[in-house]
Length: 135
Image 1 (cartoon, rainbow, N blue to C red):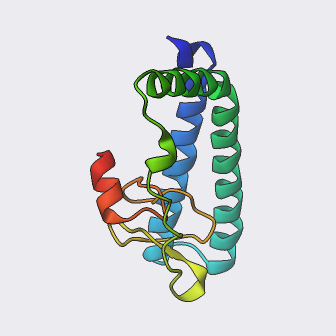
Image 2: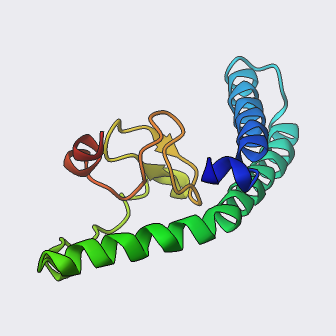
Image 3: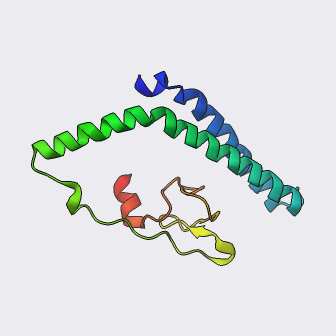
């Protein structure tokens, strides 16, 4: 109801298409169907497109996120619980050669500016235990 009102469904479709194009591009590169210079140019463009779409999605659901956080804080306060006891976030996963980031859950190598794993979708920088607990 609320997310649909903010146009997230159309953006989700755009995101799906761009991520699919990136995956197809990666496959084409793996089998030698595309030259490295062309790959570099296209992957940069598609990644920029994907980041733009995801930023727009974040902006459009911001009012809902703020309301959800307000409800959560009220709930915790009412029950005498505070988020101060929450564990600190871990540092991002170590970067292998080329500055790539390894997913803590599935060990997939991701681009250096990635926030989420391209294989499992888990947040990069989270340990396997954290991502398993979220599932």
